[in-house]
Length: 132
Image (cartoon, rainbow, N blue to C red; front, side, top):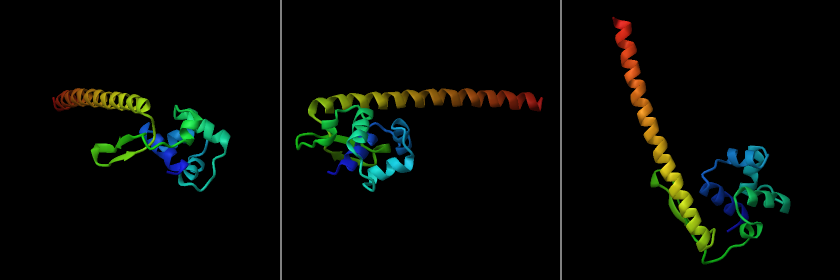
């Protein structure tokens, strides 16, 4: 796996867009996208900054071991795939992070459902007041 592929996979594991990642790195989105596509070589200082932003050690970003697996699940469970990116300890931590992200997403959805119901009630009251 090439370094730019690993960077992209780690960014996706954090559920960050290229725009978000570029902002975290104080780069243009186009400049960051070129790194992910392998069109621009990232030098050590930039790779160190990328590793830090992704919450990993520089050597961890640069290394690649056969026993290191993380499964990334796409939106709506439609893009399942396994990519090798971390140790078993990191895998356990990443699984916890993913579970927390899913739980948070569910909480947001429930909150939005309650807000929609409230707004529908408010709309009905306003329509009634307007008619009468």
